[in-house]
Length: 250
Image (tube, rainbow, N blue to C red; front, top):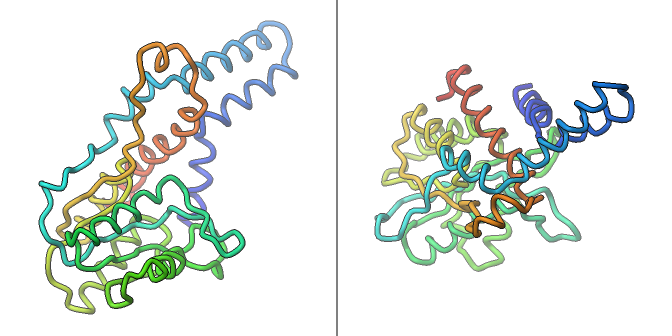
C-alpha cells in the first residue's frame, strides 16, 4: 500500500501536471480566471524549465561526487535498484539512474569493492513482475563478472526495504567488512539515513550528479525541457525525506 501511495503522491506533485492542468483550465474558464490560468501556466513553465533556478535548489539535496582517493576497500558495494523498466526484445531498458550500476562495475574492476550486492525488486505494482536485481544479475554475468561476486535481494520495493532486507541478509550470512552504498546523488541522503537506521554503517558513493554546467544565457534565459522533468525527481526526494521521517524509517 505504501508503494502505491508513494507513486500517486509523486504524480500529484509533478510540475508538468500542474502546468498541463492550468493550460487545460484556460479553455474552460472565463474572464479574469481565464487570464490568471494562462499567465500562471506560462510562469510555472518558465520557472520549472529554468536550469539556474533548478540548480540552486537541487544543490541542497544533491551529494557531490566522491573521488577515488577518498575510498578504501569494501566487502560489499550495495547498489540500489530503481534504474530499469523491464526488457525490450530481451534487452534491459535502462534509465539515467543506471549510472549507479555502471559506477559499481567500475569500482569492482578497480578492486575497491569485492562483491556487488544488488538490492531491489520490481518497481511495478504487479507481484509477479521480475525483480530488477534478477535482471541486473543476468546483465553482470554476461559482462563476465563471476557468480560468486554477485549477491542480490529481489523483494524490496522502496528504500526502506532496501535497507531492511540488506541488513537481514548481512546478519543471516555473517558478512563482515566495510560497506559502500552506491546510488544516485539525489537519492543518497535518504538511502544513507535508512541504512543507518537499520544499524548498518555505510560509506556513500553518489552517482549521476545531474547538474548541467552552462553559461548564464543558457541556464537563466533559455528554457530546458529536461529540467522540467528533473523536478519530478527532486520533489519526489524531498517528499520522500519528509514521509520517511514521519514513518520512522530514518
